[in-house]
Image (cartoon, rainbow, N blue to C red; front, side, top):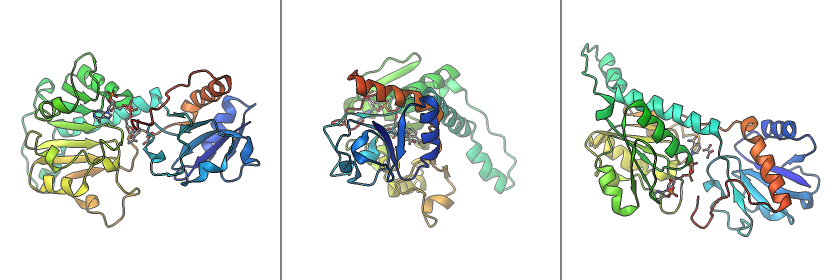
Length: 309
Ligand code: NDP
Ligand code: OXD
């Protein structure tokens, strides 16, 4: 029985090595060169070519190679009857917090404004605000957002969060559902998006939403590029609704060379690296899920594909 690594846009080799190191008895192969497609029971996927999963008649479980599962959408031939699992990993969670913390501190201490002053040879100290007076707002209070929100609160920021269902995170004032969204947004001086990409959250970061934020807020998007309406961000920055944006994810990745974001002075961008999955760190949970699947035991981190995350 075989685990197949089916990915584009990611090097399968470190995953193969990590899985084999974790359990040398495993038969792990790499798409498209598996010896027998019929032997494959477990598929570990990232941006699989559409339709390819149909080639495995005995597939029993599909695992994402990341936290997100949106890369499974849009495949009309996706085997909807099979369980889908994703990765939840302390290292990934910590890495995301480190990135968010860096970005929040950058804007909190106004390094973006000092960069402009430096270019203009302007020696003008700005009075720092206190952390508890700065409201940092987290959209999405799941594994990643919930953890980062809690850590930011421990650092001293006034942290609020928004999710679908009500959450209870020490130090974080939690809002839930569409009815509480406007109240949440009205306080968000630094808005961080860690929502999964679903039909409900696609394009959620748009001009209408930006106009509900306090004037001159900051956007940090570490979720997915499609959560953001790119033209609306440009308008919001140009009209001063937003002071700046830090973006790690984009509609098209790598970001095309002629994209406006590259040279926009109010945009700080990074190449989808806010948190990177380490195959060694996640191999044990993949192997565990493979074993659970074989034993018919409840899987770890199973995704509700009907709700999209
Ligand atoms: P989770 O599934 O654990 O959390 C998702 C959160 O979003 C939950 O709190 C959920 O609410 C909330 N949510 C979902 N839909 C809605 C909605 N319609 N309205 C309000 N809240 C909603 O996901 P993770 O925290 O593990 O990951 C979040 C995303 O981060 C991933 O899907 C991925 O796209 C992105 N990511 C980006 C990385 C990068 O390198 N840039 C790395 C890893 C992940 P509730 O709790 O009520 O269900
Ligand atoms: C993920 C990602 O979803 O890397 O894990 O974006």
